[in-house]
Amino acid sequence: MRHPKQHAVAIALAFAGIVVPGLHRFYLGQPGWGAGYLIPGLLWAAFPVGLLVRVASVCDGLIYLFQGAETFHQRFNGTHPGDLLSPSSEPNQVRQMVEAIRQLDTLRQDGLITEYEFEQQRRQLLGS
Image 1 (cartoon, rainbow, N blue to C red):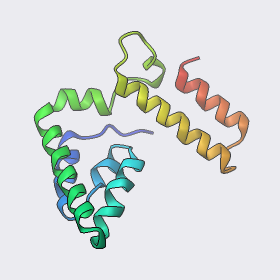
Image 2 (cartoon, rainbow, N blue to C red):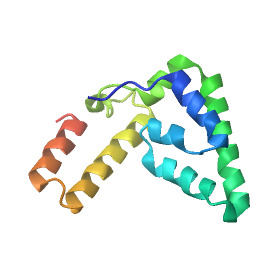
Image 3 (tube, rainbow, N blue to C red):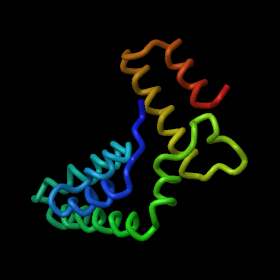
Image 4 (cartoon, rainbow, N blue to C red):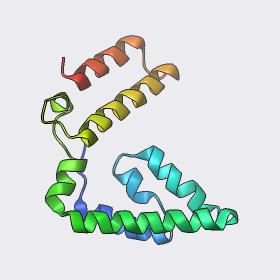
């Protein structure tokens, strides 16, 4: 079961990015972005990049803080995946659905789910 993402937790994790960048991205269900922040952030050999992802993490925290709880909720908790293709869809919701399908495809390619399971989940995401 998917748990709704909490506005205050995302803000706190983003600001904690000064020490360990990217935790907020993992929390928000964006593991690719989380790894993109975490790996260079922990590699102090690439100091300018490590500093940059820490600054980016703090900037994300400020964005979450000033966008307000309702906007945050709409963006990260959204609607049912089957509703994502409605004419009023926000681009972020469509991106979330596409990312979910890509993750399913990766699981299928890795042999962790069957073609049939992939197709079932894909159809459920698309609402058909």
